[in-house]
Image: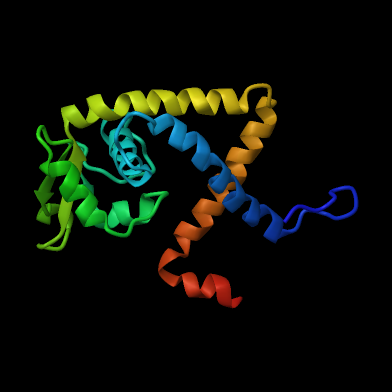
Length: 180
């Protein structure tokens, strides 16, 4: 996938392809962060996402004031496989003590009557917080000595890619068909 950059300019496919390459390579660091937690990568992704919504008030995962997130929002947000999301949520909600709390739809917010919402419990926070701390350590170590301007540029490019895809998510076929 890589080219000799002295001979060829960076193409759009190089940039987008590098996101997939980085995701693949980062998986090793993610597995290190979850080691010993008993969580799968997919479970940790779910718990960290809900931890971020409730405890860190992340603004890129839509949630209510109590930290509840609609299942449908989670399906689009999770980095790792969203397949079997309902089963994964049920498994983490059914353990004793529960790591997740499932609630019925919030009809006042316009959710469909049979939609579900989920949030992390206090025990879920307790169990996933060490994973999050190890992830922070891994990220800091990985990026040390990279100049701040490059980190800012990289972040800006990734944010722009995500924003463009989110803006067209409902009409994603138009993005790939060459239509405006």
